[in-house]
Length: 497
Image (cartoon, rainbow, N blue to C red; front, side):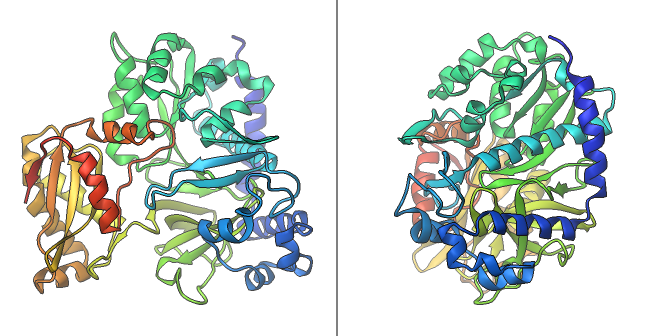
């Protein structure tokens, strides 16, 4: 295969120089006004007076925040699946099916040609930042392997298809790049996850793979399967990961990566590409300023207020947990994405993903965030010296009282001591939790330890194996959590008090 890296480097040098020169606020405002101008003759644009919008302030005064459910019921449901000129000009050719890890509801997210082009540009930006840091790397000397979902595209209407976003991306790989992309569409869209893994293990030209992309939890499954007889990909130069926190997987994936292989985090969503790691690990991801998405950031505590404060690139502050709001060239406007981020820098905006807006347990008034649960579990694992895998946490009632239940994978006998350590860590992290525990309104948490692999089996049983499907870390509804844990603890768990 001809090494296309020299051509790629010509692009990346110019692109990195441009990204370094971008001024966040003017760039984002120009992008927003372009989106508004493009969509002004849609039904949504006419209803919201897009013709009169001349600034970010004008936009914010005319367009209210909406979650998916509001967009669906108010704008998309009546015409679905044929959306033509509703919130974006022309016919929407694709819908990305998103499972909704916290709500359990399948979402149909519009995907337009403009958005797909922007996503391809952001993918090239990821390679640009990699080459900027590793100028001797040759990512285009071989194949780029994207481990996506197994959802074959469905014909929803003439000219309209639906499926996993990775399946849409596989279908839309530009002809020029198809020889460098793996797997081919026929293999990428195999509906059976286990059969797909077996086929990938057998048919992938391992020594030709230079770039590997996917969600860490599912990459780990693939690499385990392919590791017999040596490194799965001996010439791998770059692993691109996103979708879940990297820290729990870093050490577990390291044995499968050749020496010198770089890793780079990305923050893509079905609704648009949000951020890319441009510096070292732990230094945050740089907000993508000019790839089709205008971003707003609402303090989490204000999200459900009548008039929440809507920050953007000109007004963000560091150290505050914000809910992400996106307006995009997929016809989303002031759309609440569902993720929570915290900025480390303002110029350029560089962020960490800290959870989901639904990642909070407060069935008993305790107001415990997903980030606090993650930190408490990390501390408990360190104290007990237990190696943990996937996990999920939620509330349950015991008579008139309540408690948290944590289901976690581990093969270590030390994991049965997690309960008290997890409780102690939460007591130190959250004052509301401490008040409820010490006041007697809440019982100590219960930890169910299940064998490694149980979560994979659970996800597979729900038809959510592989690709972009992620284990729900926090399920706030007691009824949904009870139903979920019944499936997870289908075998005899070891319960830690």
